[in-house]
Length: 256
Image 1 (cartoon, rainbow, N blue to C red):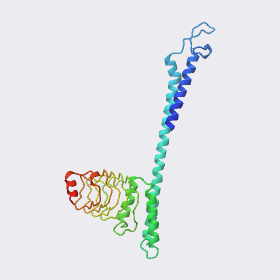
Image 2: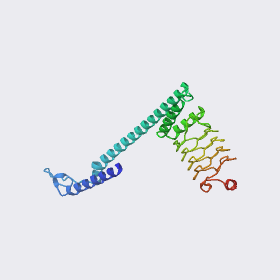
Image 3: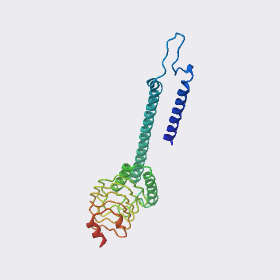
Image 4: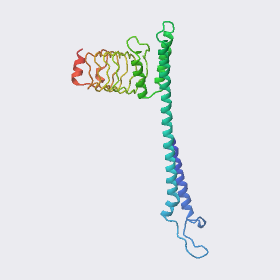
């Protein structure tokens, strides 16, 4: 909306200045037209260069100042947004670490409540983070052994869209019903991972190892597995027609 308003104001200002200039040549007191003062020395009319000096240069300077200010504010917004995201990540890691160290997640009495709170905190944090920080959360949970079979924190419905998971190690992880849309999962290791029902729309699996991964009922529309290792992958109930794969891969999975 702001660019439209700025353009309108600029056009209106130009029109007003043009009108004033045109009228100014008909009014001697404005000094635009040639005139003869009391000392009889003729004063020439304003030239194009005079106009540029009077109007264009100030306008350019004002425009430059406006653009610089806009760039500065944009940079400040980006910096502040990044700072807030880092605060969310730091707060989340501290919270989950405290639950782990205190033993609440494994306690027979408080475990169910603690796991529920941890899941809620995890889902909320993911909605506020960028792809890089989402990847940090997933790797943290994996290395803390909280998302293996019968996971401590159930990630069903978690938002890992756009996550930067290149070179991640997630073998044996249970990531069922998770949203990974447009994530980058290149050179990753997901051997034997349970990925059933997850959404991998437009995900790049280049050079990743998906051997023995369970992808039944997963959504793989426009996902790229051409250069991925897919030995013994379970792709039952998956629309193979929308996956980017080699001819040999398509032939193999079509006959399974």
